[in-house]
Image 1 (cartoon, rainbow, N blue to C red):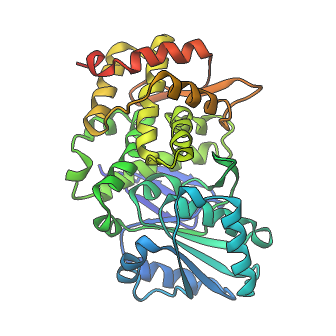
Image 2: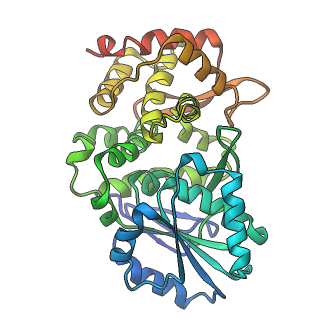
Length: 371
C-alpha cells in the first residue's frame, strides 16, 4: 500500500492505519494544487501583510506553479550557504521593519533548504515570531529540511550553530518543482531519502533501486520519506532522544561541509551527508555495532550514486576538529548516530579519536571492501 500522507489541522494519517495528532505540527500537503491550497489557507486566516521571499533560482518555477496564488509582495533573493548568517538575517529584519510588518504578518518562503533555514529563523525571531509558510522547491528541502521545525544559521564558519525550533503554519510540497532542477540537486536531496530509509524502513531502502536521475514519479517516494521524518519528529519534537537518529551521517557530513565552505569549495549538503553516512557506518563497523554484510550492502548503494572524495590525512584531521563543535556533542564528547542494521539506528554513541581513525581506514578502502 502506498504510504499516503494526508494532514488536516495537525492530524497525520499514514497508510490509513496509524493516527498521529499534534496541534503544533503544520499541515503538509503533497502534490495537488498549491495555489488553491494557499487560497484555502488564507480563507481561515487574517494577515495584515504578506511577504514572499523566493530564491532567485526558483522565481520562474514559482511564477509558473503559483501563478494565481496570493503572494503579497515578492522579494527575490540570491541565497547560498555562505550568506546563511546573522548579517543576512539583519538585512531581512531591516526589510521587515521597512515594510512595517507586525506580528499579524505572514512570510511565505519559496526555495530550497538554505532559504527555509534562514527565512524560517528570521521569521520566527522577528517581533518574537511571525507566521510563515514553507513551499520547498528542491528535493532536499521537500524531504528533509522543511520538515521538523528546525530553523538555523551558520556562525563563525560552523554549520547551524544558532537556531531554534519553530514550525511553519503550512507546508506545500509540489513535486512539479523538481522538473526544473539539475541532476546535481536531485542527487543532493536523494541522500536524505536514503538516510530516512536506512534508519527507519528497510523495505523502503531496498525499494530505492533506480538512480535518482531516472526517477519520474517522485510523489510516492516523497510520501514515504516525509512520513518517516514526521513520525520521528512527532515522537521527539525537541530532539531529546529518538530524533537524534535523523542526524545519521551529519556529524562527519557537517564537519566536511564546513571544511569545504571555508575554502570556497562548497560541496552540496546531500553529498556530504552521503559521505558522512559511509564514514560513520565504517566507524560503527569497527566498534562492532554494524555487521560487515550490512555495511557492504549499504555502501554499495551509496557508491552507485556518489563518488568518494579525495581527502588526505591533513584534510581529515581538520574535519575531525570541526566535529568537536557538533551540536549533538555533550560534555566535550563527540556523539554520533549509527545505523545498527539497514532500517534501524541508535543515537548518543560516543567516539574517540582512535575510533575515528579506525573507521577512516575502512572508509578509505570501501570500494574494495564492498566488492
